[in-house]
View 1 (cartoon, rainbow, N blue to C red):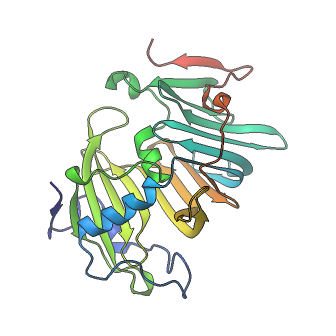
View 2 (tube, helix red, strand yellow):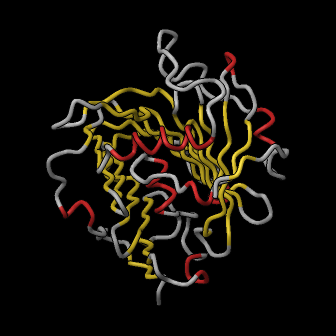
Length: 285
């Protein structure tokens, strides 16, 4: 059952008190799609109605800026594809070759970073135990990524809602909070920040049992996209800022064009890569 809580924000989430989301995700002329007093149920139903129209999407012209204390900042081009429920692929490269490969398919997920000191393609499995998952170089949770990228609905039965702070420009927000499995074992708390006026998720974050941030995603520059074979349109962000603090890794993704429900995404896109000079580090072994 979805609960509406009037309690204070989660412990350890100091950023909530200084939240600074986008001033206006759609621009000053965009009308509100939800009333200021919309309930948590109405907010979630609106978000899930958008998600229900999206089976998959891809973007071939993605600009990525990598950042983090563990590496030299870099800017590259990338292609991104995502398909419900577990297919995901982000490949980034430059004139010097590929830089990052992060992906998932129904059985496994992987991560490769050319600039990492560890010369491996790390491979994990969705059904492996938490001990092995802790060895993955970044706290990657495919289910969280799928929801962040708009192809997995929010489960209202496991959500506690509380009013969020007022954002820039008077933006009213609501916080949707749920307990989930941690990407590296144990339990985690997921926070979803929704702009009530425009009915869009502007931030998602995962916190461990000690209240420390595991991963976060900030969404901005939203746009409407037509759905093939339908008169409907869906809303997706054109910019996503991903951060994994413990791994000292951050990626800013800017999508110039998004293709919703493309006619076909080749199956090879969902296959784990083989990188010359890099061994496969199978975390199930």
